[in-house]
Image (tube, rainbow, N blue to C red; front, side, top):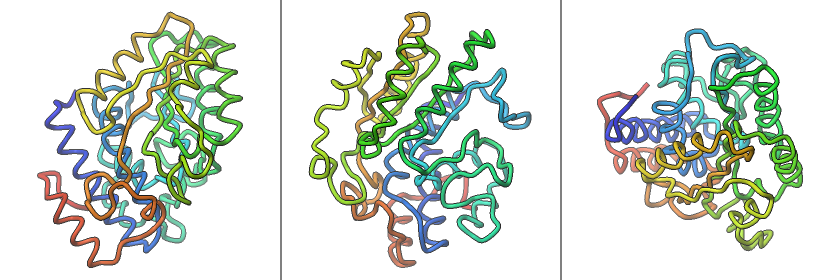
Length: 283
């Protein structure tokens, strides 16, 4: 397992990869990718039971992860590459015609690490719940199904249908996470739907709810450990991670304007200067 300092270094490199991918493709979604970078870094490099070399889509004997908010694919691709699922050099093909690294995760080209094509918002929690139920039926007692949702995405009705399904089926091997950055494509979430206190809503649905700082590595690891320890209670877990859209780059942070906007080369250079270099190196 990686140390907290190592995780911070990896997360910085992941943010560099995100900015460079989106700039190179001249399209993509940097804002949410940056806000969730610490969460997925902790999950993939310290928490999940996985074997990139022998990965199979049926997830037997391994943990599964579904990126419900599929538009933040630059984050997932960077984490998968840095974790050894495919060569880091392939990140340079992001959003190119014929590339495995499409704008939203796809299973069409058999990309290792992708269990479900996502991007049509609201569907990922259903997929993750299905995987969790399958693991229960198969008698797997040491693996989990993980999913990352967005707070804007949580306006979708299917999210709540899946939430009821998970409780009814006592899926305590399901660990869902929400990137609670308060922003979506059209502006602050509060100005679009007024969805209120999401954590309170999940508690009302009878989920085990944990709230944590999504940019504090120690807090992220603690939240994930508490979620895993919830197994045996018959309740699924939702971790509400408080985050900052565009975290790590001052002109991207805290605004919906970088939800789906590619930086210019000049802006990319400025962002990379702010993030700083790491021993891992760019692709």
